[in-house]
Image (tube, rainbow, N blue to C red):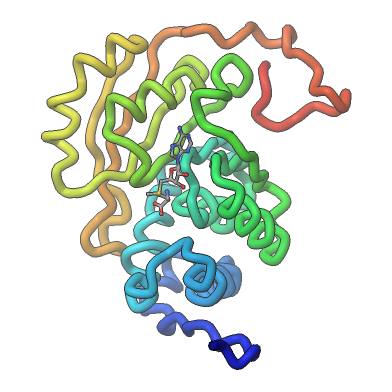
Length: 242
Ligand SMILES: C[S@@+](CC[C@H](N)C(=O)[O-])C[C@H]1O[C@@H](n2cnc3c(N)ncnc32)[C@H](O)[C@@H]1O
């Protein structure tokens, strides 16, 4: 039986020294997000309690390292954001980018909406849905994803969302080269593309974050600029058809 008094949530560890270098002026927002993950995130089952002591190194800093692959003003769709990793971290670190967090589960989108409001992130939009349901509707410069699906399935979901020259940035573990080698042929059949494995955040993140990057080299369907359908409200929506 519960006492009716809510248990206090967990408290995240203090940010490690490299968090200052990684987040700079955004560190206060990153701290607030870490608190939210440790408290509400754990309470609502979005992250496991065992993740709390390693929130900074394994989650926030690891995800933040990807920002060096995103040029100024990039449009990004993070598929399978879960509790906001890596999309929310990138959105709070880089106010110049436009970030859509695409996540099918209501419980998670509710948390993400609350986090975006609390952290005051006007450049971040939360959408409920599966990546494959957005095909033909959403086009972007980059798709990010962490721990969402094996590479061939992930590429099937992500590549149709990309404009020509755009890249899927999939955060992977140490086996990234082997995973890419096994999947590369299937991936390039989905849409002509070039792929590589890069490590980002060297000198700030230890170990460096491993990213499989798949860059599409063909048009693959996005309509020509100017033929964009109007959003239902009549207001132009970020990242919509263009
Ligand atoms: C293991 S969690 C990873 C969450 C987060 N990216 C992270 O690294 O902590 C996988 C997430 O992908 C979402 N997901 C599963 N299938 C999806 C799909 N087809 N499109 C978009 N998201 C999907 C799930 O709802 C879940 O939130």
